[in-house]
Length: 89
Image 1 (cartoon, one colour):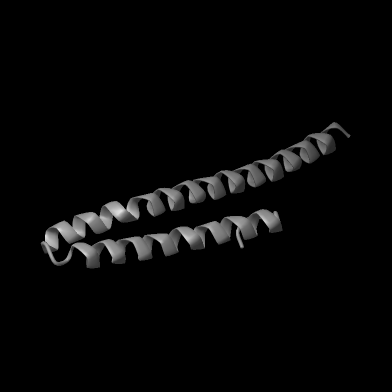
Image 2 (cartoon, helix red, strand yellow):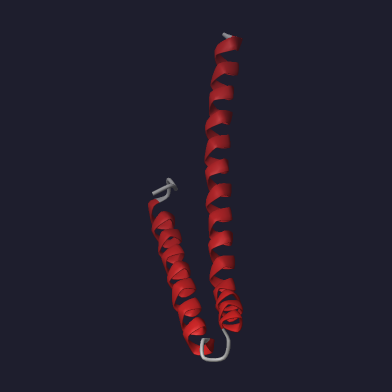
């Protein structure tokens, strides 16, 4: 959706979906497992169980942002080279 490279876009979006699913499954499972002990312990364990998925999402979003920045810089470089070429004429 956001990246210009279609296969890479598919892979990144697929991995984002997996990361979100792992967050939901891990946090719900941890919460329901430790709910019998105390509510506070269940919340803390739910957050700890969701951390790997959160880290995966943040790293994938960082990757997408860097790729978008690279595409924009390539566009700007091309426009600057064209304007420099037109100025020389």
